[in-house]
Image 1 (tube, rainbow, N blue to C red):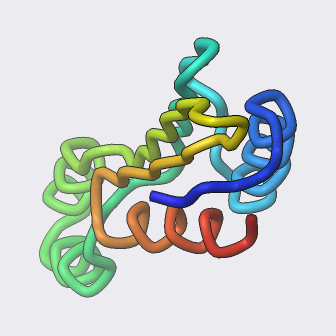
Image 2: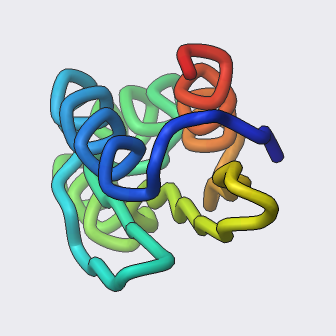
Length: 103
């Protein structure tokens, strides 16, 4: 969570630009929330091993891997915007934290 002096619309614009550069897409947007999704959360070592054991095993693993998502919530309090970032996996959480650090 981070308090910033930017308006919610400014934070929205910065978030879209930041996450677009990381190949995320906006999957949902409201006045007080943005949800970004992109890429698969998979272990590349397991994927390569399963691919070597059989293309079908690797393909099934890839298709069952969940998509990375980052959810940003916004709240205005005393003239400041409070931004919170939640990720669906470790990499998404790190991306959310990088965004908060960039504000």
